[in-house]
Length: 196
Image (cartoon, rainbow, N blue to C red; front, side):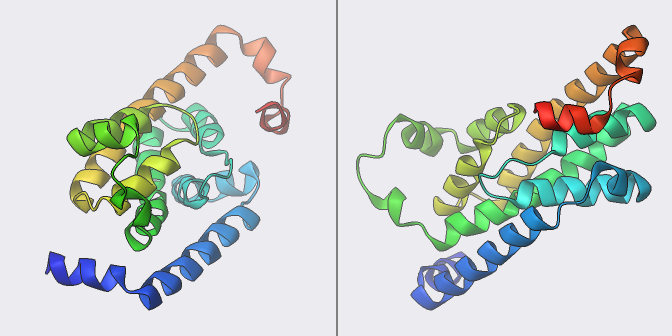
């Protein structure tokens, strides 16, 4: 089964269709991002959708961490981190699929230290990079698909890292707002969005 899936993904026609679908998803996710207020009106479903769309944009900045900060102040930070981490993890499937359909760059012999480390400990690399709050993880998602690591392992490692990151950020947001309420009462989330 895995061999037939690999052969299907190596097909140039399938790769072209996957590329078109991925570009369409990325463009839709980027251009149809709603304001934070819209996601808030949708409740936890808004958090899930917002985090999914934020991470479906490959190498484009998106406000999923701002969503976690805002929702952690309204809901329990643990619940917000759980819902947000599921949404962001599923959004990372776009990069994984992009890598699985275009895997030529990993066939070269000399690809650098990251690829060597990735081939040795792929799930650890996925976990560590998903813990870090920067958009570099898209490269790891693409690399995961291109090297055909198991999807279950990718999703689990990615989810655990994103859950940890969102727990820390959500709890830190709640703590900072409770520590300095006057400062944060005067600041709007649109101001924070412009700063970051």
